[in-house]
Image 1 (cartoon, helix red, strand yellow):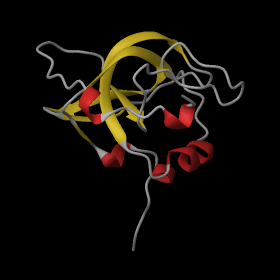
Image 2 (spheres, rainbow, N blue to C red; image 1 turned 180 degrees about the horizontal axis):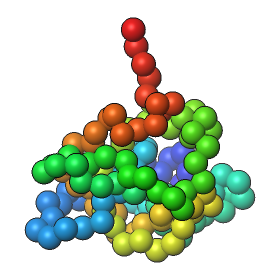
Image 3 (cartoon, one colour; image 1 turned 90 degrees about the horizontal axis):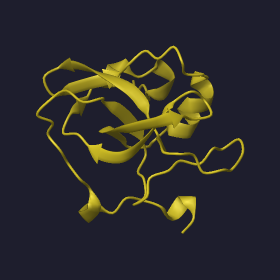
Image 4 (cartoon, one colour; image 1 turned 135 degrees about the horizontal axis):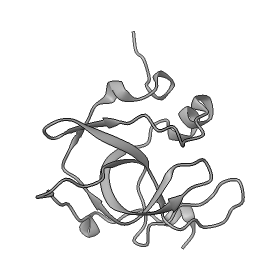
Length: 128
């Protein structure tokens, strides 16, 4: 199965409602049953799934967090992420991706709404 075919299957989604605080991340795009991202610079498989740090805004709402470790070229990312679904997830952090983003394993979906306004302006499509 190649990277483009590794989409998560709806019946395999594991939703959890944490009883205690957990690390929260945002994932742009779906993932496969063995979630590991591809380093687009080298073509190699990374140790986990690429995600972005998130933070709780209010009960049940998260937003993209500021992350000083991230190499952030908003124009490159805006094109790559345009039109992709966004998921609030948690998991075990196992390293850093090629751009400084966290890599996680044991990915689980969280039932949180995502604050759209927290995305850099280049990510958002502005309509008149």
